[in-house]
Image 1 (cartoon, rainbow, N blue to C red):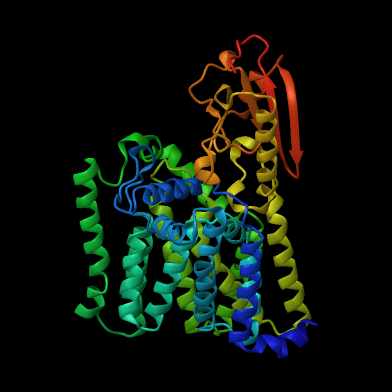
Image 2 (cartoon, one colour):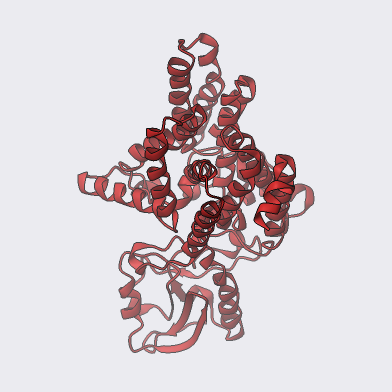
Length: 479
C-alpha cells in the first residue's frame, strides 16, 4: 500500500500538499471548541484589547504587555470584527497560517527531498507533538514559524523583496523573532562567502533595513507610551539574568526540550547517518543548507536563552523540529532497502506519537501545551466549572494555580469567570482549593499538604489529568 501511494498519488508534490493541507484543516475543524491555553491566553487578552478599543490602541494593559506589537492578536481580532467574536472564528483564522506552513515546508523540503518522499515530511510534521498541539491551541508560535519558513525559502531562492517583508513581519510578532533574524543574517553571510565565493553587497544588507527601522520605530513609540522597552518592569522575575548555575540548568533544559517527546530517536538517526553519508562523500549542498538552518538558529537561540530566567518551552523550537524532520527524511530516502525505509519511518512516527503521553514528575513540568495529553483537560475544566456553579460556590473563594486560574474571558472569549490565585494566599485561609497535575509549580507536594484534613467535594479524572476540589473545614466560607 505504501509503495502504491509512493509511486502514484504522492509522486506529485502539489497533490501531496493538498492532501495533507486537507488533513490539517480537518484537524483544525475538530478543535473549534478548544480555548486559548497556557501562554496563548495572552493572545486572547490582546485580541480583546484590540477589539474593544476599535483597533486604535496598540499597547495592551501593562500587566500583560510583553513589549512587542503582537500582530498575530491583531490579525485574530480583525477576523473577530468581521465574522463575530468567538473561538470558532479564531480557529478558522488559523487555517491560512497552518496551510502556509505546509506550503513553505513543501518548497523548502523539495530542495533536498525527492517529490515522492514529501508525504513523509508531512507525516512527521503532523506527528510532532509540539506542532500538532500548537495547531489545536491556536499557538502564536505558528505565526513565527510561518514567517521564518517564508524567510528561509525566499532567501534560498534569492527573492529578496519577499525576504525583506518576511523579516519585517517577524519584528511585528515577538522580540524572540530577533533571534531568528540574526540567525538568518549569519546564514546569509555564510552562503555568500562560502557557497558563492563572494562578499556581501549593499543590496544584501539593505533587505534587513525595513525590519531594523520598524524595530527602532516601535521601541521609541512604546517607550513614549509606557516609559519602558522590551523588559516590562512588572515581569522582571521571568526576564532577569541567570547566575552560572542557572545557565547550566537552562542548557540542560534546552537539550531536554529538543530531544523530548520521542525526538531523541530522530537526532540519533540523523547523527549516525551524517557520519555514514559524509564518509561516503555524498553530503550534498542541499543537506548542508538544511543543516545550517537547523544548527545556527538553534545555537543562537540557545546561547541567548540560557542567560535569561524565562522558562523555556518546546514550542520555542518549532523551526528546529521542522528542519530536523526534513533532514531525517533526507537520510531515509538515501537508504537502499525499501523495507528498512518503512521500518525506520514507522518506528520514528510511533515514537513521536508515544511522546505525546510521556509524564514526568510534576515538579519538572510536562509540556501540557505541546503534547496531546492535554486534551482531556478542557472537558474536565468545564465539568469543574459547572459543578461549582451548581453548588453556588463563589469562584473568588476557590484557590488554585496557573493555568487553571486563567479567566474564561480570555480563554473562551465568554463571561468573566476565574478562580483565585493561590500564589500569594495563606493556604489555611483558603475556603476551597483545586489540586491538579496540570499546573507546574516548584513544590507540587505543597498543594497536597494544603488540603490534608480537608473535605473532598469532587474528584475529576480523564486520561492522564486529574482535578480535585477540596473544602477547608476551618475557614469561613462566604458565598
